[in-house]
Length: 356
Length: 259
Ligand SMILES: Nc1ncnc2c1ncn2[C@@H]1O[C@H](COP(=O)(O)OP(=O)(O)OP(=O)(O)O)[C@@H](O)[C@H]1O
Ligand SMILES: [Mg+2]
Image 1 (cartoon, protein in one colour):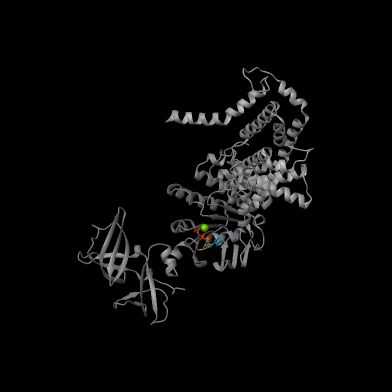
Image 2: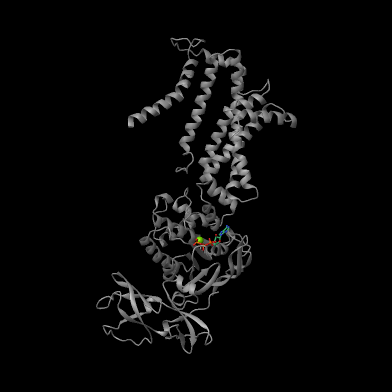
């Protein structure tokens, strides 16, 4: 069931378009990440849904009601800010009770709900402290409790974990998923960290210069990127460009790469993407085990970076450079200068749409 | 190094407070001519009680300072809210225009006011003095409260609105309590600016209505009596008390921890 719906949203600042024709749905209870580079319009879109910004065009609906012209305070949203934005002159209890009081919930009932919210974020007994007396992670939990205690129609988070250090951040990611699942809130989460987006979300929306270039489940957007931008933004990718032939593309050097997906018309130019971890290196000289991956090119290892559990290689072929991620499971790592064969499956050869 | 620093601080304090201490002491000295040896007496305080013009002008000064402080703080805080939280045409110009009055010599401001008040029919006297002092104090209030605004992040108000507060409720429940130390500091500043004011008061006072600095000035011209030391001491102790109370309630320029 659709809970939040945005239709044909556009926003300009002066003559600069910041969002262009954004349309998408957020399913009830789902966790969606808005992912994109800095300046791509993630915050602007989130703030339009929140009601802090009125779009130049388009509509926002929450729970089936058009709220495009409704001010923030009437929308029943929950929001978590990057800086937490806890009220410094109020205790944790007072912070969490603030939204309840605005909804006319006071006294014993308010106290009970605040207590339950603090239990949900695993901070029971912290109610009498001031925000200043809490660690960053604890403040974040209070901010979350304050945003969800009112049972908002939608929970909006703008890079809420970016101020935390790496370890705490991972811990909070786990907590965030748990709390989101337990509360069942439709959640929209802004981040520019692709790993975070893939780990947390039911759906990832990739924004580029004010447009949603792709939206889908994490596996979908990672395994089947639609554009060069999407492929590059979600991690390392190798690109091959050639002429479309039956069942694949022919590269400049005459070799053919098989593609197990619909391709543009034969004879036109097309680019395909291959993730570095999909490629298996076969050592020609050492007669490594052959695989049935039908795409193979011979290449020369040009660099090798050892990182314990894994290795990152660069291999050169035909003037191109390929990146390969390999588990450290070979008898011995390949060395620079080794002549190898790179093999991968046509299933992992993803044709991209021509750049817009 | 440490000793040098201490000596330095002691020297500054002595430089600031010694003249004041001498003045206070002389208010309790029997001799009208500041002669030593010191012999304790309250005769100047008794004389002061009989000196109606001096006492009345002292009371005037305090009332004008209190009224100026309240009016300038309310108006200045409102201006500060607009300048810190809203965008409107001419805002930068307005912000710039608020500051020069602090730097313009009071003699010039006073002359300008006198001329303007004369031609506009406002004239002189209590009301003119009050208008003058408020106008003078507002830029200080805007400056002090504006600095305070920078410590209150705009996203706090946004957080309140996301929780259901209207902008007005967000201002009164979040911003104002956090701004309170700055507002109190600004009020104190406005009070001091008014109490201290001589030039403008001198221009706008009438024979029947003057403030303490103006009265002291005319008294000195006739001949200095230690009664002036006495009333100055009373005023000084009063101001110090206000500052101490303020310091106990709020840390100037920061967010108060108490409450
Ligand atoms: N009030 C404003 N006035 C003018 N331009 C603005 C304003 N707010 C945002 N922009 C511009 O809109 C674009 C998108 O901004 P937005 O904050 O939505 O980006 P973002 O994707 O959240 O980036 P980041 O990851 O850096 O937070 C940027 O180019 C920004 O400069
Ligand atoms: Mg942003």
